[in-house]
Length: 390
Image 1 (cartoon, one colour):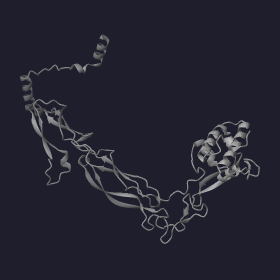
Image 2 (cartoon, one colour; image 1 turned 90 degrees about the vertical axis):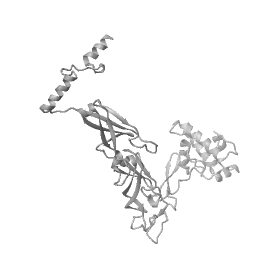
Image 3 (tube, helix red, strand yellow; image 1 turned 120 degrees about the vertical axis):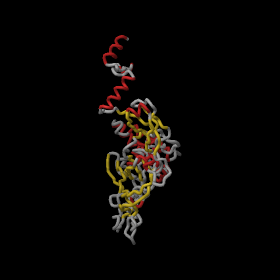
Image 4 (spheres, one colour; image 1 turned 90 degrees about the horizontal axis):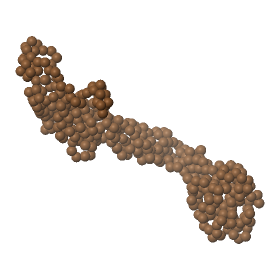
């Protein structure tokens, strides 16, 4: 097998770093012992890795191009003896990470980070949900520490560079294996990956840059919301660690039940009960509007309306009143109000009332009614009979 690193990787002598890395990745996927445990293949993998070790290092590559040995500077010990091969390069070969400077770490992580979103639930009345309302809320969230202004250090002090990782936030760990010395980068335990240490933490926030506090804020609930609707207040959530920007606050709406109206989408429903005589003769009822719940004493808003019960109205009849429902959320127009009429039959009659009703029944020829069964009211046996006849 040739000992020329260019031939081992299959690249030209003027190949750039990206071409060399791509060639190595391709061969490493094919030859890695985890993929192909054959002894000859393992030896080839070592040779390819040695070649990449030389050509990926500008100084080693220049020395080889001037006529040096491929194993020069390694004591002739080959790949398994002090090659110092970066574990990141092997991982790049299999997972495609890195690019230029793939052996470099990620660096220190910032102390300042965005805060989390917060969620509170607010119960409002049906009329408030329909027409909108403004509420004052008490919220308990993390806020910026006023003592240290978010940097976590006590007044008069400041964070200092970590002596363990020298501000990198990571430290290298070296482990020997059949592949040589494998170097991995891990977060620095001394500074927890920040790259700096706070020698004198702020007493108010213990170095976190934020404290918990209860505060008041105003939330405007738009017209048309319903149970489950969330109103977003940007930047009113939790302040982030290190005084980072605050998350958002979400106010989730819960609409309380109403004693008169029920809501289905933008449609309101209510039921009115009328006496048998009113249903037969017809009448006019006065019903409250939903606006009546939010109207002030001097308000000109309509608080009631007339509902006409036509003569002969049957129990269960629905009357649809256009535009008396709930406004649409961020939409024009309102839904409808559906009024269901229930006819009440008197349960107790005195002698005179019974006499009058019997007289009415005689006049209408209803002294011995037979009843009428509609076609849609067939019993079980009738439906079975029809099924067999078909």
